[in-house]
Length: 109
Image (tube, rainbow, N blue to C red):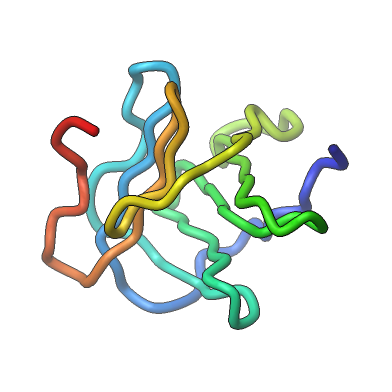
């Protein structure tokens, strides 16, 4: 799978976001949300980390995230994400975006 390009600037609408990978939470609170097209794909950015969830050419939801604090390339990718409420997740990763001030951190699966 080719690595998706992620923007480095914080832009978009205010939102509440959550990003977890391998049991570590990277985003849990206010962020900027930017929708990509009209298929539910989006970017989230809290100024320290950025993540995205997007439909690939087969229609499956995939994504990626990386740290904005260093100059290293993309950190991790998300494969085979499934939607539950404001979140897209697989067995070890989760990315969520919701209305500002509303918690989107999921409780269980």
